[in-house]
Image (cartoon, rainbow over all chains, first blue to last red; front, side, top):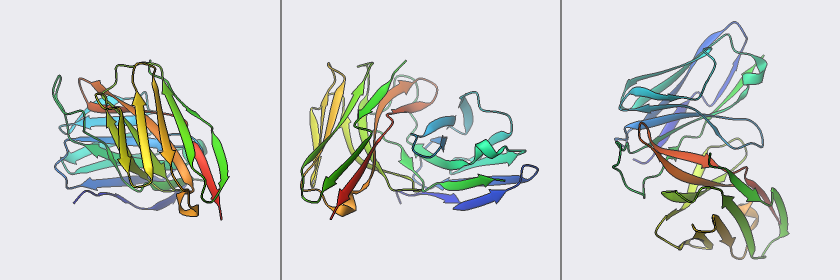
Length: 119
Length: 115
């Protein structure tokens, strides 16, 4: 199974709502990522989890709250979002490497994304 | 800081043409370089991955080359088809000691192949 799944595919929410995005992989990968992609722009990294621990937060506003309950699952909790947060949210995973280790053939596998609209 | 640039930003060609997409990067200390395809509103599909020690990779009608010393990669698409219409993203992979593989993306090339 080389698939990363994301739910829901589409989400419309108001600025006062609380919602969550879900990402799942069963490839045994220990690194998982959240990206935000605006129209006609490349993906921008938001968060990185390595061995279920948050290792990188790219100065993302606190209204986005990531969570990694186990090695296969990654959530992104959303609260009090702004209309400018509307975007495609992509999840990815890769075999984790520790400092100095790993393989140059490692790649990130991307999910299909969640299209988020904030009204 | 690594910067990745893709030229052209958009390209429209008639079906059957051979075409070249360009990618350049500023820091040659990379582990590998990947080319992705993205259809509108969809996720990314990895097309080719070239390790830093390799010069090129081929998959079907696609051929990607890497010249690490000059910071350049090209994606060659032979005999283009309307189904090739998509955005093509180049990304270089560098190592972050805390978090494994980190990708830096170029801005993408939006390709339209007309029947």
